[in-house]
Length: 311
Image (cartoon, rainbow, N blue to C red; front, top):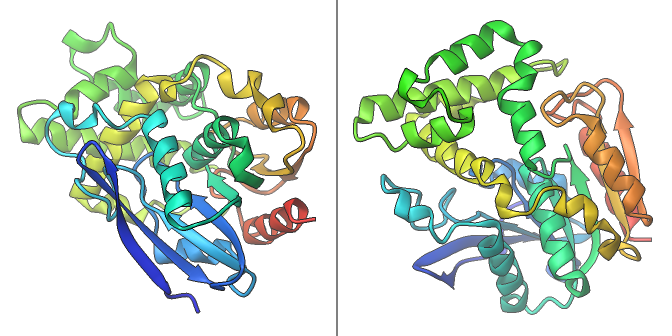
């Protein structure tokens, strides 16, 4: 049952084709998973987030990553048609392609930003929203992740910031890295990706069961991932500051469930809390022993979230 019963490549325009798959119950309640990163892509393990006996689970690799084509390349021009607004349009086009009237949207980490942006843009297409490791990718959150949280990890941050050459040190770190990841010298690009992903591992390491991300051992994945993350972060997800919090009332009437870890210093609890205050039909579940990986209770909490939004 875990293997897809249907999959394909959807032409979304701009020269992009996004990979999608459906698994679980062909006649079940439709739900879509929006992965993190940006740039992580989906994996077979992503299917475990669903009760596959009950749900028609849709997984989609976002533009430029995973099995979608083309993958992010060596020209920054490749990113011109890779914005939050493009991804929102892709999700809606996939819904229509699959003949789904409404679905539940599940988003984790960066996927929670995308899920909120999609649901606020297309509330009539959404039956419920389940979010984990909540972030809105605001400039303030990006500043925290790339600069301020270094006070908790000073040794790792010194290595992270110290890689930036003097010619770029006047710029925000995320913008400096976005530039280095497209340097004409492939050795500089590769080293920038390695430093970026080492920092990604560092700021999530407070999780009690932390393990370094094994995908970061692949230099090609590191480069694609870092390019997409810095692209979206340096543009604050192509949204106005606090847009997703300010417009949360658009979702009132749509049930929402948020799961967040107390030890999540990568995405401090404040964002999920503020969102829950503005979204009156949502519920926030706090996991006291979890960081940005969600901890050992995470899958059960997500299942509780699906039950909540399906009432």
